[in-house]
Length: 81
Image (cartoon, helix red, strand yellow):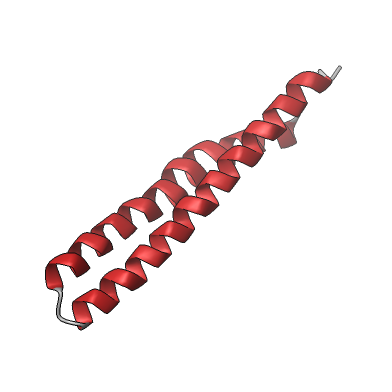
């Protein structure tokens, strides 16, 4: 038998993780664009810093939260565990 409160909590946690992954990925994209524009505009140090932070934010959003957190939870929910 399915425990409804436990499934509800799991869905809320999954939603929060997906929202966090989306936010981190969006911030990463914005930082990447800013970094490339800064580098092309002549500020190489700021461009490299923003590009590095953008890569870090993309890693957090896609790999750490998306692939390692959200995907296993989604698989558990779909399997009914």
